[in-house]
Amino acid sequence: MPAFVRQVVTDLLVVAWVYGWIKAGLWLRDLIEKLAVPGQKMEGAGQGLADNLTDAGDKVGRVPIAGDELTAPFARAAEAAQGLANAGRDQQDLVADLSWALPLALVAGPIALVLLVWLPLRVRWIRRAGSAASARGSIAGRDLLALRALTGQPVRRLAKLDPDVAGAWRRGDEKTLDALAALELRSLGLK
Image (cartoon, rainbow, N blue to C red):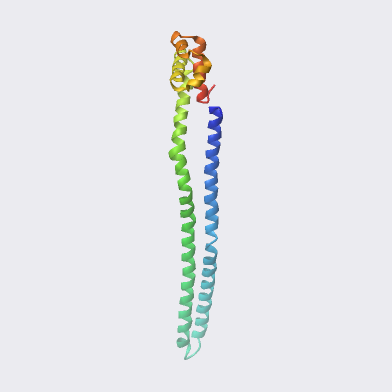
């Protein structure tokens, strides 16, 4: 596979990898947020019960003579219902925290892998390809690319150019120098 095609395919795979992990993180976040529904129901039920018990206690408190004594159980029950509502709110807060923390933890590893492994390799290739592209415009650059090919390319590729490729390079054979420079550029994905 030519280097240029390999670079494009690798870049697309990395983008798909990152996109897939982000989608997985968002899916996990949506799934975790569904856990807040019971807390919402508990908060609504507890708050509604607390409000109703408080209203009932206020009405009972208006009864002459025994009203104050009858109000106390309603107040305690309203307080317990308010505790239930608070527990529902606390559960929702916990779910909200988890809905961000767990997906971030899920996505952090794969994205760190991309940033720490793939990105430095990609930047190194960009630098090498950029240097080679700027060098190819001059005779000295062509000679340097030919030397790099001679020292860095596999022997079987070099032998395809000329059986005595090193000798042709030493003699300064223009055809061999051009072929070696082109070989080096192709290995970097350039033409």
